[in-house]
Length: 475
Figure 1 (cartoon, rainbow, N blue to C red):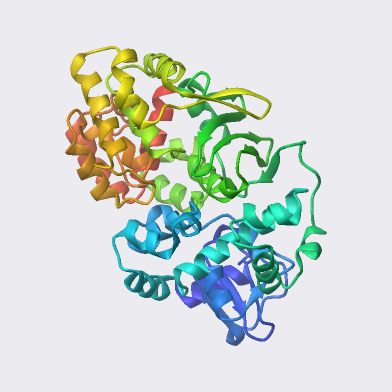
Figure 2: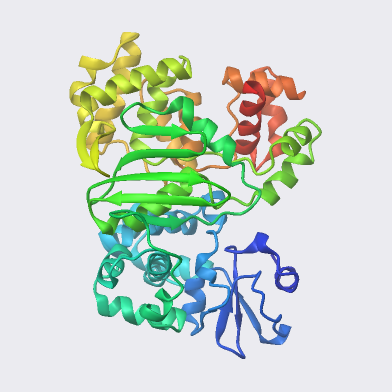
C-alpha cells in the first residue's frame, strides 16, 4: 500500500487494515491501529510502520485507547513465503525464546547478520525486537484477560525475568503491569487460561468447525457444533485447549508449562486461519462468475491450518485414497495404540503418536496395502531421524519438493500438506475427486488438467477457491 492509501484507511477508520500496519504519530509519540477512534492525525505528523516492533524501535508507545497489540495478526505472514514471513512465523512459535537468534537464523538458512539485515529492511526491526513485541502482545493478553500472578504472566509470555517483563510493559504501553491489568475483563475458570482470539470479519465459523468435526480423532480431539478441543504436544510439555464461538472466539487452555502459551496461541491462530484478510480474498474470488455465488453464500471462508506439522503429514498419508470416515477410524486406532497418555484439564487424555513411535511400532497397528503402510512408516522414520524436516515456516516450494522425494508421497499429499502446514494460500488440488465435483457444480472444469489450467486465474487465492469447491461438493 502507498502512503496515501494507508492514510485514507486511517481517515476512514477502516478495521480491515487493523494488524496490517500501524500508524505512528510524531506529535504525540504514540502508534495506533488504523481504526483507532481518536481524531485523525495530520498527514505531516504520520509515519507508517509494517510492525509494532518497528514503531517500538523508533521510540513510539502503544495507544491506550485502541490497543494495537490486540488487533489480529498481519495476513502477510501466511500469504508471503519469503524469509521475513517465515521468520515471523517462527518468532510466533517461540523459536527465539527457545533457540535464540542463532536458532532462528539457522532454521531459515541465513547467518544471524544476514537475517538481521533482511528483517530490518523488510519490517523495520531485527529479530530480537520482533520477538520482544510478540512477548509484549502475549503479556497484554494475559494481564487483561486472566488472573494469573504477574510472575506467571512474565514467564508465560516468554520473558527471562520479571524485571524485563515490567520494563517492557511500561515501555511499550506506557502503563505498569498493574495499570494494564486494571482493564481485565474477568476471571477465567479455575486452573485454566481463557483468552479472546481477535479475527477479521466476515468469519465462516460454522464452516471451520464443520471441517474439524468429521476428521476428529477419538481420544485426541473433541468437537461440538461451535467448539473444538484437543491435546497437543508442545516444546515444554503437554497442552489441552478448547476453542468456542458465540460471536467471539474464546480459547481456553491448560498447559503443563506456561512457557508454551505464546506458541500455543500462534498455532491456534494458524489452525483457524485467523489472520486472513477475508475482504480481499472474497473480492478477488467473487470477480470470477463461477465463484461469485459461492462467495456470496459463504463470505469469509477459511482454510484450516495444522496444529502439528508431523501429525499433519501422518494424517494426510493415512487418509490418501480412502474416505474421511475410514481415515478417521485408522487414525483413532493408531492414536489409541501408540499415543502417549497424559492427565491434563482434569482427566486422562491422549497425545497423537510421535513420528518416533510410528516409525518403531506403526507396523503393529497400520493396516491396508503393504506399500502404503511402508510409506507411512518410512516418512515417520525420516521425520524422527531429521532426514525430513517439516515446519510451519518452510519455504512452500522446497517443502513440496522434499515431500515428493519421499517414497509413497504424490502430488495430492504434498500439496495438501503445503496448504495446511506451510499455509500456502495458492494451492489447487486437481487430483482431489471431491474438489473436482465441487468445481464442476460451480461451472468450472472438473477434469484435472483443465481445472489446473483454469484455476491459474485465481492466484494467489487458489487454496480458498479449493475450500469453496469442497464446501460446494458437500453441501
